[in-house]
Image (cartoon, rainbow over all chains, first blue to last red; front, side, top):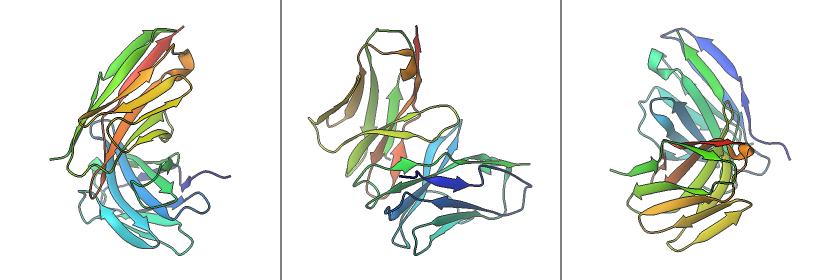
Length: 114
Length: 108
């Protein structure tokens, strides 16, 4: 069974630009969550989608948004990039909504903002 | 405010030297506590889920326990391949909150 895949794996953007990251969950998983990981703040929850609906949202500004498609694939968008957005962005999938079952993480997208 | 604190930040063990990692939490409406292992450059790998105080789970050399205020990850006779960062996370009402992790190094 294929794991969670994320594309691209590495990305370099300039301050002020926007970026879209993609996540394909494990087949049959309907929940996709996004996280930001930095050395200073650790792993922080961004939001969760289940069956195309955002169920939970962390404490991040509105520049961070996401969506989920009918095939459960999810995208995350960050607009007006700031230097502080440089991080490893991880997505995780689960069979059921967040917290009710284990999550499986992808390898992450390493975003560098210059 | 919901908080998850892991200790120690770093732990160095000799191969075969058993120890425990701690995860203390203050959250309202705990729905689950999760342990993950993360290797450098990779996403976290799921280890255990605990839902209620008194619950215990085991997998190979690892055993996770849960009380009302904290969880322990016990490592028995660790091997060098157990070296990684161990993360705990707590599912509260609206989000998943992670601790900063314990970086474990097991020397042969």
